[in-house]
Length: 204
Image (cartoon, rainbow, N blue to C red):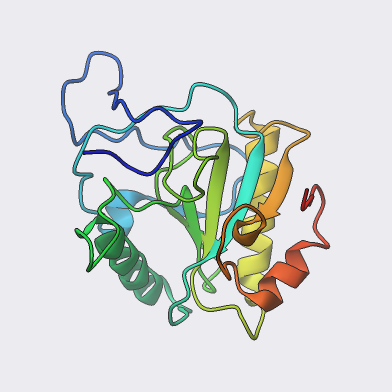
């Protein structure tokens, strides 16, 4: 059983020191300067199906995704949507991805909140080939034809800044859209065009 996290990420699961609990997830620390982050407990996450792998180096990439679903504008709606992402990611193929947990590091709703996925410290399952060296931030909704609202944009940008300021993302990080490294439309054409104006974006 493994996630699609190679070649950069080991598929050998590890636990936090001293823990043999295969469903243990290290909670993201509360960092100064971050936007509001709704924890896994707060949005009603299921435990992962397997022990999670911890990142061994500070991420140097930030990948922007979209969920390609209906949007959300309240914490209740966004929590429901995030639970649906987790269910899809963890369900066995062909109904889902067969991953150990929701794949994204964080998800951002148009309520202006960030939703904790695998968080700052766990290897994600968001961007094939880059999961052990990058974080994946997904906007909740479908952004092929429109942008996320200003609340969501601000929250995502504030999250990245918080990560840099607190040593969770390297200062000279590279920002990319999912499609820059994979055969996908993600994060949607309109959002993809927009993130190319953000600091640190580099297609190459």
